Amino acid sequence: MTAVVKTFQTPKGKYVYDRGSDSILAVGNEEFSSLERLESGVADSADWKVLKRYKNQGYLSENSIKKIAYSETFRYQLSSQLQQLTLQVTHRCNLRCSYCTYGGGYENQRIHGEKEMLLSTMKKAIDFAMARSREVNVFTIGFYGGEPLLEIDKIRQCVEYIKETYDGREVMYTVTTNGTLLNDQIIRFLSKNNFHLAISLDGSKEMHNKNRVYINGQGSFDDIMKNMNYIKEKYSNFFKNISFLTTVAPGVDFSKVNHFFNEKNVISGNAITCNMVSELNAKEDVVFDDQYHVTNNYQKTKVLLAALGLYEKKKVSRLFSRDISRTERFYQDLSKMTPSGTVHPGGPCVPGALRLFVTVDGVFYPCERVSEDSEVMKIGHVESGFELDKIVKILNVGKLTERECKKCWNFLHCTLCCAYADTGGELSKMERLSYCKSAKNSTLEEMYIICLLLENGYDFKKKMK
Image (cartoon, rainbow, N blue to C red):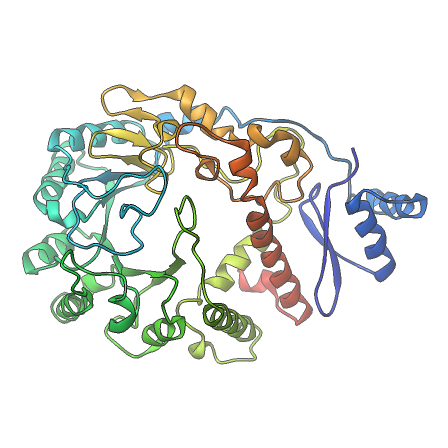
């Protein structure tokens, strides 16, 4: 088999990504044409001479992937290196956000309900995770819902249980909340135990209230901001532990969302994570208008200009300020692995090891982002432990598309985990393949940005010191 490559070009240069060395190479016009033909499978004798020249320099080696399979080291990770436990303390929620995963708009997913996790189930899950995180210096326990603060008493009891039972273990607590139920009593408890809060906030009052509303349809913005002002005034140190989750939905004026987060307001110093409404398993197409794409691209351009010193950093949107860090990490990870022999494409983490998710019923899932109505995603239970056969199947999701993956240029940087192959009852080859194009486009965009920055004098090595 010949080398696996991907050619692309910027306004200033021509490049080839070589999967064998996980490198991006700048090439001349003639070489680029030869490599394009090589990529398309129509190379002639002159093109093979170009390939040979690169091979002599240590690049463009033949595809040496023989088999798709995940390393057996995952068993050790599951026994001693669990990183995070996330407890779904309740199905109940006091909001009815239009795009909510549990609102009925997604396939193979539960809907809002009244179930609550028993304290005994919480303790069993904590014991299970603690016993399997012995080599982790700081173990994270997250509380999730529904709206987890509806069960604040049980959260308190969990924290007390951990303090009494696992004295000496360093634990970080997190809670993902809509922020409407925060009061002085709850805030004091969260502050005392150094909780980290992730609060959903979608921008200005107008934009936030388009989607994040109470059961009666009333907007939740004013209550959240009242609570934020109170915490900042009375618990200023704890306020630093709060970050915000922003979801951009179709029909929302993204420029207004962006403007809100760049204003000098009560949350101007806190971290923000911005995501679009998930398309994964959505029953209806998630379609964003042209205004969103124009604003999005404009803000990304400002990030690049600021990185090159051609634009004031303080004028860069806070919603995009982390983009350059992601690109730097991508650059830093290049050339660290050369795929050969028995390997697995990028994408799946070890189910349960990175962020074990436990539902109200005590069922184990790889994380909180997979479907709770999917049989194939269930990887165990607090009463019986991990189901290793299911974990092995999920980990080796790349076997479904082995033929395609072996020759794919995006093998090392693929982001498709098991969720992208899940149809509810089985892992599907066709479902996984349907997301390949978007995964490749994401990787190609990162490589394109890297080359643009390098062409204009950006020093990645200096920035990463």
